[in-house]
Length: 251
Image (cartoon, rainbow, N blue to C red; front, top):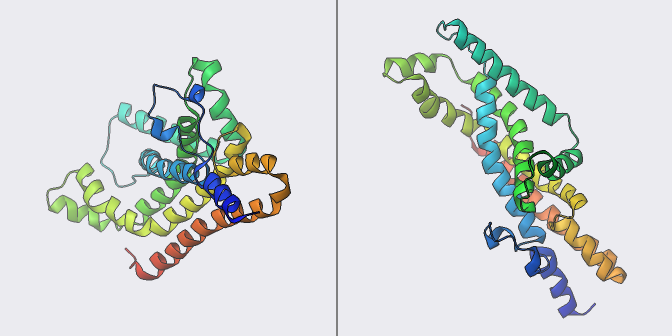
């Protein structure tokens, strides 16, 4: 392979093939439809981690045990129990599914159930946001349980309400403690985006498969480049985990 051919191959793996005009959905920004390859894998990972953090926080708060909470009425207790059960069901259900099966369900169920046609990037982000959210839920829930109960009393003495204690005291402490685990989840999500190739989503693995079909004689080189493109970001994030684990003081 010539140097120009190697450069062209790298550009395809990094940014994907150009999107044909008939595949563009005018209802959604071109920015999220015209990317592919490694850039699309990174984009889905980043969006999924941000949205997944919100999903995980909500699930963790729903599942949170409050042995020292003030007495509530019967309706409030029933509502809290229903929320806790629903959140637990979501976490157990999603966590027990293989990632490939979850991808197939998210991509193929919206239309027969609700006649919804959405761009593949939206479906991919929804799938991996839920995937990241259920794992982040357990991390956040464990972090909330590790917060010293005396800090609640300190917050009340300072005149803070329950939600203010959560936002100003608990979540900042949990965030500092969970950063290494958060990076580990990001690494897992980034690698597992390769499962999107099963639904012809043009991320790095599917783009590499298209490239292998176009240039079968260079399959060894293509696979080595794909290996490096997955390995390098994961290794850099792993190094960041080690640094955060070493540098961050414990809460």
